[in-house]
Image 1 (tube, one colour):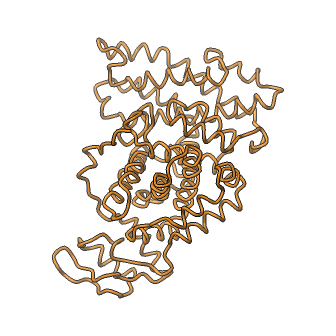
Image 2 (cartoon, helix red, strand yellow):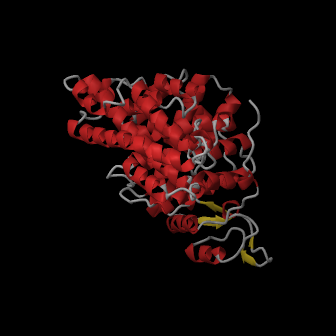
Image 3 (cartoon, one colour):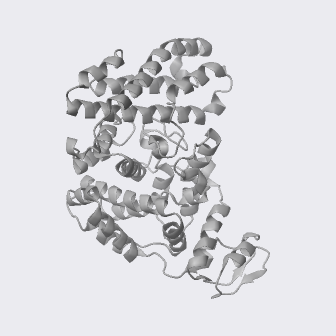
Length: 443
């Protein structure tokens, strides 16, 4: 495969220490010893702390007021830091207590491989403090990252990746969200209604993670690039750069599948994950998706609860309103971009996505022109009702994802009248969208 290029916008980027990360380090320093590994100097040559001194919140605040000669992660170390052994133990606890992860590693061909890989993992010294802070202060990010690493590694086993590539994938998956520690944690709390402006801060985390990792001695370049690409999608609907197909690194494609799979397993159930894998072959790596389906082998027994007709009816109504409202909107938008053809206009992505939505409904075995009749077909058959519920849940996620993509394209759409797009955004977003605990959380 040809070498992936680094976007120009990233190649020369730098990253200042985030106040949110400094707050997390200060919180860690209140619960355990954090010491200077070397003498700490400002960029002007002023000595701020001596090697071996314990660094508490007050000294951290002083350090934050200066530009230092090196990042804090290189200058500080904590008592009882995370290491490869503790990572392996944490992974073993997950596999022991979570039947879905036990199922995946047992079907991977070597159930102990991920444990041994973690035990042998070479973690760069610079990352030890950051991963320790993540585990102790941002536990949700840590748990998500470790579970994503387990899934990514089992996918790599199934796909026959060489051991060296599996190790790069594992360290990349473990660190894929380190940039989220530069995000205000309040934005990620369940129940918080995320505004479009706040979502832009969240969408920058692949860039933040990449910038943190790319210059870290001992961190593989291929792993850093995979981190940058883990929210890209094959159809160009991802971020931060809207890359397509071969422009996305091979390891980035695997972390993308593992990242979404972890969130769906944690928030929903295996039938929902299986539906996502079936519907989104155009967005995710085909081989990785097929391997995931083989690992989970979802059945009706894996469903959490019984599908509710009331919920499915509301979702069907939402989908029907969108499909019916799109036809006149499409004609209006085509007239506005004339003489450009739809595929040559700034709205090309939108026409492509809406066409894909219709195709996905057909692929799921339903008629997009008679959405209202889907519930009648499913009544009385629990298997079909489960299929319908999973498909509708996935459609809600896809529609919300398209709304976010329109927001990301806003700078390119400034010449178009705002009213039609505003109406479309209303059709795309259900009444309950925007909360961190809905399906949009893993977009």
